[in-house]
Length: 564
Image 1 (cartoon, rainbow, N blue to C red):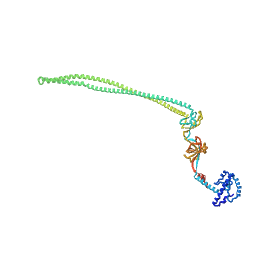
Image 2: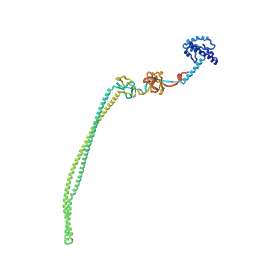
Image 3: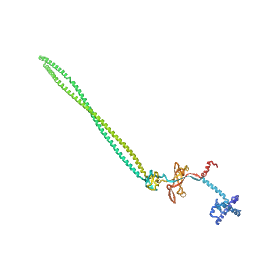
Image 4: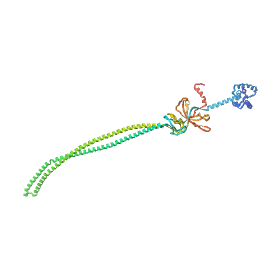
């Protein structure tokens, strides 16, 4: 059926406005009457509003010139239309079948407005392009895991989950009976080696002291021997000098004797001369006596001649007496001195030979004492060398034992497990004492004190290309639905330099996200997060305009070679 408002399309605008007013009044009055009669309700009225014009189910606009027959004629068509679209309300169906005159324009204006608003929103609006990662809360700085390095039975547990511990505080103790016994055994063995070393070192010190003492004694003996040799050599030299002096004296005496031997000859010559002088003085006296008697000369001359004769005779007599006595005495003395010197020379020769023999004996003793001293020193040095070799062996055994002791002490120390840092016991994987633990088995986990919680998440490789440190993130916790508790803001703190392969996710990068807050609120109370809680993180990679997102499929098709 053709809508009746189309026949009015050629009317002027003023007449059209005038004609709409009674129509609206008629529609409103008809709608009010239907509401009073119960034909339509408020809900139908609300659903009848479309394009800004209220309509009522079963109410048709009455234009001038229209008849009730036409309205009645439209009733079967409405019924048929209602049968074809039972999901439409009556008012909407009536509006669709018989729209108002302004409805198309209103629909067009509404569509244009919607397009303008949508275009503006798409052009200026932005959406976040995010990378999704999943992970769990951990303490920043890595959780410290306590595990033994050797197998053993737990003897004592000092903590429980949730306890606060300080660095160096005992966590657990393994069975130490065998380790303590080994440490004691090695300590005793090391003490025995130390005592043996002290004794051997004492022996070396005694030998060295003995060597020094013997060397001093030998040196003193050698010095005394050398002094004796020097004295013997001095005596020999003195004796030699004495012999040489005696030989010199002997030579002088022989020379003197040789000089004395000609004295008798000279004495005879002197006697002959004196006798000749006496003869001459006698002849003179004999010549003078006659002259004195004749008075030719004075008696003084005679007296003088007599005196000269007397003196000559006395001199001859003295010469004869002295020469014989002196010559014999001097010859005797010289011969006696010669015999004495020869005797002394012989005696000194004996002494010289004795001194030389003594010197030779002393030299032999000196050489023997030197050899004995050197032999003694060599023997002591050999003993010291043997003891030093023994000390080296003892020191090697001590070093080996000390290393074994250090290893045993370290092994004993490793039987005690301590907290490496100040923190809180997050997990304790032992139930009671007496359990046997294996090397590397985690006994406890400690979170550093005051370490903040961060989200350690796995980001797929395909979404990690644009992720950078400092990018914002929105976190949704599984335990706290974000529809009720909201999103928790975060910031990317670190990204792993290399990817790792996971069977369920493939290649992933580990991302650490710092939380802006570590709690959620419920009815004004704060609920703190706990380590191990899982969450999804949406990392804001970049912001894109909505129009770019909408046109991105077309752009991809164009880049793929599809022409429009």
